[in-house]
Length: 253
Image 1 (spheres, rainbow, N blue to C red):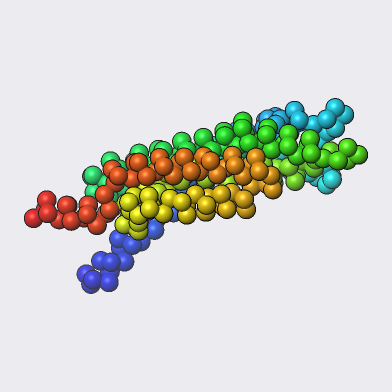
Image 2: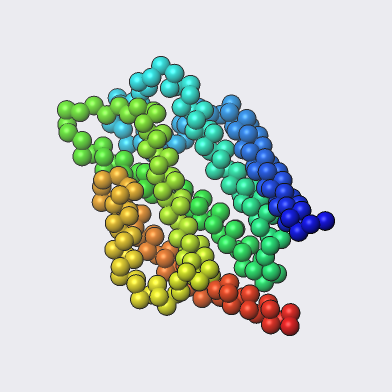
């Protein structure tokens, strides 16, 4: 058999495995979506609760599109199904990349997979329980006295989903720091020297990613700064992969 065929067969095998794992992840999302579909209105009520509790007496949420009361909760349910499926999706990712890792790297990567999932959910919880009540209180109480606050359910969903995604991924900062140091792109010592610039950059990013109020910006920037320090601490335990490869070659020799 030619070298071209030898190279093609493993590649096809990897592509088939990737397709299988993507299909499994999609099936998982669909199953969870179907299981939650009956409760779609209840799920929307839970997500809308931080705003509803802050609305003035007599104010309600509205739908400006006739189909919005039907499709908006279903859209939210699909997003929730995706969020709930993240651990299984990451498990499939782990199953795909694990065979290409050394045993030592597996012991390092598995905690990253688990911690990234946990941090994402912590970011969602932080947004829901801390950011939303403060942000909605600020928006409602700074509105002009003659303005009736009746929020459209579709626009509200878009707003909160943006914040969910922003805070979910913002809490991945420690994992990102570790990966940058592990791949040799940077080092903990270099990041420490650049700390003042990074802090300024964090507050700048928070300004663009959050609503135009100081509370939301601060509530995003401060956790990101703390998570940056956590990432620096744990990055010390992850030697650059080049060093790991050299150690492995020395052990082989």
